[in-house]
Image 1 (cartoon, protein in one colour):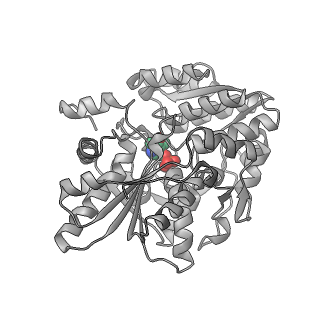
Image 2: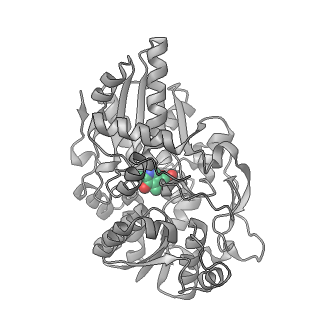
Length: 430
Ligand SMILES: *Cc1c(COP(=O)(O)O)cnc(C)c1O
């Protein structure tokens, strides 16, 4: 079977919350310097997502309207067998990939954006503010807000804003307002622009700007596209579908691979299977792949840190490179965050999952091999997972092992062609 699909009425009815199943109890968010960050959470976020953030309920019902829209935008997504890639590699391994690239916004991010925009509208919120790095989260939230009939302001990291002008076009088509961050709209942005006029921006700064706007305006809330528990939760539709599809294919994979930025596509695609591992039902490996230039899990320290640069968020216990870390302008903008989901951090700490890193040049080579065999141009972010998946398939060739490898293809790269062009012409910068 090369293409394993599920009918639309098999979109999951619940999200899976891993909180009650974590091997180490999740450390609570705490106030940092300046205080009041925890107290400010209800001003920043909608009630529904804050409840989900702390919930110990294992299965949380997906509202009917959200589930309905999941179906309208093409969920369940297919699971493909990478037969052409396998043949090219001449490997005995079987490679499967879950197609989150087939989402209309280009990545898995719409799964959480729709839920967050839905709850905001239900609570009478008029506008959501957010940050975006490469533009995928901004595009997803812009579309979700437009579908739910509320406004959306996106603060886009300046270096990406300049590298990816068409992302701005996408977000504007979806009726949202886009600002290059650091911007002149906020105190945080004005301060940074004054001190460092050429500042390239960072996700941490863009988050601070979006939160500042939400703190100052009554009917405005802030929305985050990764890292927090409720975002991981919303993404678990991917893994629940994947689990059913693997049953249909009669596969018990040896290794599951996804890239990690803040952790949401990894969490979403893997948690329902990680639960089976925690329950002792399967013995697979789970690899979380990050860029070697932003090595949060492989080189960061596990400690309390802020989620943003200015310190508006509470401190979260997570793997972090420090909240003032500025990652180099690599093309996989979606993986340039200094921190990591506290849940994913706990799973790494407890050795349930295994972090690995990949270099930019190598991930583009893997992407080209994948595109030229499987026809899909992958997002540079997703290509981190592809690179490690291809390495696993090559290892299987050496040992003759008939391994089964599953990769979450988190998004397509059709708006990342500048990066691909730089790669092909030998002009990639670190
Ligand atoms: C945003 C993004 C990522 C990284 O974010 P996570 O929250 O770690 O999933 C990965 N792949 C794509 C295509 C993205 O858009």
